[in-house]
Length: 284
Image 1: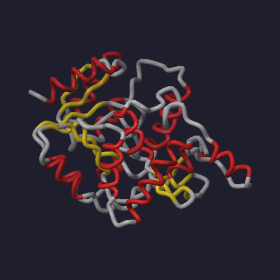
Image 2: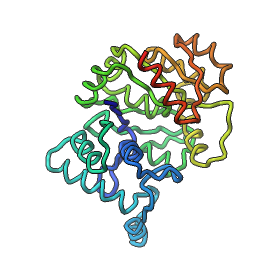
Image 3: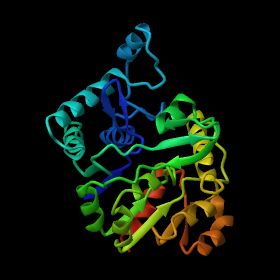
Image 4: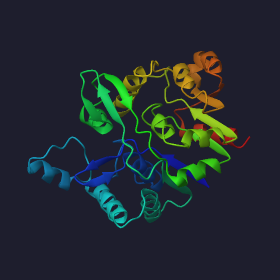
């Protein structure tokens, strides 16, 4: 059984509903209903509720589609009834037909990430990333460092291998690792693999990818790192044994070794090839 432990630092309250962008993106993708072209939400989505909110004079910097809204309403109903975010997530994933993968929130509690901007404003991560398109420079990223969910800790401790995906090293991977007990649990797993979120040798013309890259550069600058595989690997020194980097970035292999990790070349832009490489490393 594969288990995904998803970041909750991006979660936010939207008109009284708890919205979990990372959890939902993972769930929708595994259910085959994620809008890969837009990079978020559900395919064939409509936005009647959002448009009506705007018509009533409210700000609409964060988009929630009508079908997406149904999931937030059901999750909220379950949680108001006393169930945990873990329970609600497992139910929603089952309802969408996700059977072979267990999806768990890293925490059952609100542990939201905030960004201190160079201009002195303190914004929720989503306000900065979505509302301001990650354009303002950052002074500091403030991770919640709260309690991890018991289910997440147990899943990691019982794992044969852990894969740290190619997500933002600070606001995604870092947000999960900041939760109590997660870093220690990862360190106890016998096989640990990290995937570089950067392919420095390839440029993208995709606006969504470029938005992610801008945000990553802004965030990495707050911890003194460049947006390069070598610097990113140094953030995973005590977390992973292997570090996957794209074949186009072979020049960074020595920096990866200097960080105490074993570099492994892979095709990070080909999902099937990457999956095969990860499977081979995980099953060694």
